[in-house]
Image (cartoon, rainbow, N blue to C red; front, side, top):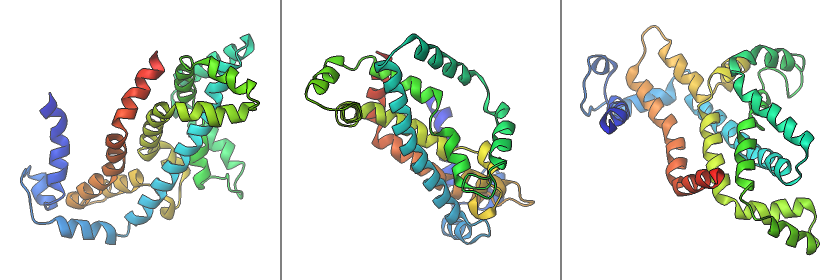
Length: 258
């Protein structure tokens, strides 16, 4: 089973060194076309370099904003609990049952009313804002805060800290593992997001990596060697972040369940 799971990645890496003809023929050997495929990728009209920059900018901004606002929301729902807030939180959880495909048309109509501003269709803000504060992340942080010692908050209040200082100076430093786990989930989701950017970003210079990779495969004669090279490059950021924060990710997930 491990071999079956790993084989597509091995074939992908080997494919980036071969011609498109060899890939379609099922050749599973190291070829001599890596430099050519790599050069063609960055010299093509698809502007892969710009797509990498767009995806990185969207993913980083989304991750930072999501960690701040979602953690503040989860913190507020748990520390300042009331019956009304619990009901609101339950309604937010119900929103997780609605597929995103059902929300695309309302979102598109809402943002299209703001055309001409930085929030209009074909702006990066349209892609970032809907994912800044999600029900899953709020639930994730709230579950982690349940195990946070409330005595620290009371002690900080006695020392004269206001509520924002308690959040930023007491809670956040002690929840590094939770933030690391949430950062991995959010970054990977934003980096691999395809459907909403396909609808919202209509200019070629604003396309993200998944959109460019899709355009490569939609051509009349796809260059699979160049395509495999692009897929490998697109996989590296998420894989690197996951392996660097793997320990914190596991600890954060375990901590959120307790």
